Image (tube, rainbow, N blue to C red):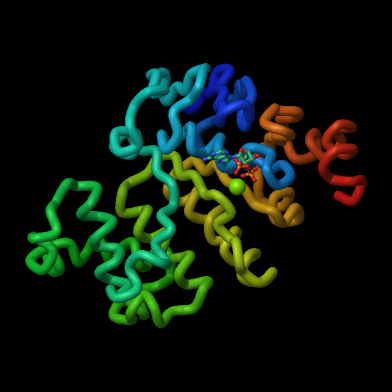
Length: 246
Ligand code: ADP
Ligand code: MG
């Protein structure tokens, strides 16, 4: 199995934010985690990336237990979450931002930054082509549209050569049109690069349109897991979450 959580649990004091979640994520899947606000989606992601330590349970990646590895070591293994870069690199150009993602993964220090600008040109441009930002390479991160910033975020993340990409509400703040085009773009990336994506998204039409597999959390507990049609038809999911409208 590509990624597996076994009875993973996270408690914050008396609150059980994630409760005994056992789930398999298969290589090459576009896998959505859905559930109402506060269901534990972000916490579950954080247990996989290593941002939070599990209270109990295990995380296995390609058969190896990674439950207690720090986040940066998981990143080296190919587990990456999209950086919230929009607020971090506003004074750098699109080109420089992607270059930094690339350098950070290779352990190249920032003192090498100027020299490396030309050195990695081909690689940076390949990523910029992938995310459709090549024509904005020299524009400041600040000056591009919100949708393009999200693409840039993905570009920076691609520089870290992820195998498993976790996207927590990647289309947050986007218009319905931008949301749709971004998700279509993400699906293309998965297909072309053989990535595996675990994502959350509040727009159910996007989730059901793009995910190959959907898992539903409710109060930290996994209440359904399967193909979109199976999850949509699940009585408990209907009652608790979809409200009969999906
Ligand atoms: P979701 O992403 O599904 O909206 P979260 O994982 O963010 O849900 O939150 C699940 C529950 O855990 C919520 O009740 C939230 O208030 C709580 N929670 C999340 N992070 C923390 C934290 N760092 N400290 C304490 N409680 C937290
Ligand atoms: Mg969340």
